[in-house]
Length: 166
Ligand SMILES: CC(C)(COP(=O)(O)OP(=O)(O)OC[C@H]1O[C@@H](n2cnc3c(N)ncnc32)[C@H](O)[C@@H]1OP(=O)(O)O)[C@@H](O)C(=O)NCCC(=O)NCCS
Image 1 (spheres, protein in one colour):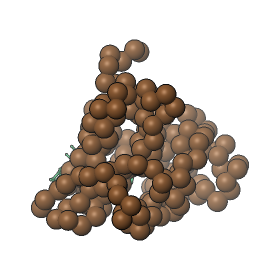
Image 2 (cartoon, rainbow, N blue to C red):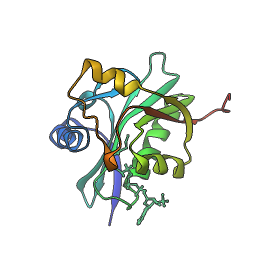
Image 3 (cartoon, rainbow, N blue to C red):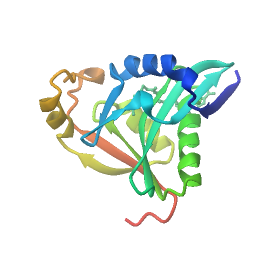
């Protein structure tokens, strides 16, 4: 198996939209009360033997001191694709001079919560009830998530490239 990671290119749009719909049922992704048009974001594509195998999208915060991973998904679970994409995002953020990279996942996603910690990321905050508040604006957001758990909160993970001020 040959795994490679490269920046998103315009030719990836069809696969990107398919990937976003598979995991989030939309190209619009809510995080921390903000809506991101994820199919227009920069990021990285993973390929296994030349075929699309995973996607990471990211957004630079205003001022450029930190950036957020908006989506991360893998089509070959447990083969190192998620880790390779996350590493590419970290390297990119560092190269751009960010001091911090962060992301959120919803409270039902125990696999992701384990994965980010295994990758060395730290819990940064619990945004209790933030999905409930977004659902008031977007009633189509499903209430039931993975393992039948109600999706209500976002958990924020982070990685610092300088000393963690906390
Ligand atoms: C979370 C997610 C991105 C992880 O992707 P992944 O490709 O399975 O991640 P990896 O393969 O890099 O790592 C997962 C495990 O596989 C292991 N692994 C890595 N390379 C491996 C290999 N060649 N063979 C077997 N296992 C391997 C890793 O060590 C890790 O195990 P560990 O935690 O016990 O150390 C994936 O589960 C996913 O797409 N989920 C759905 C979308 C989602 O929920 N995204 C996160 C919300 S923002």
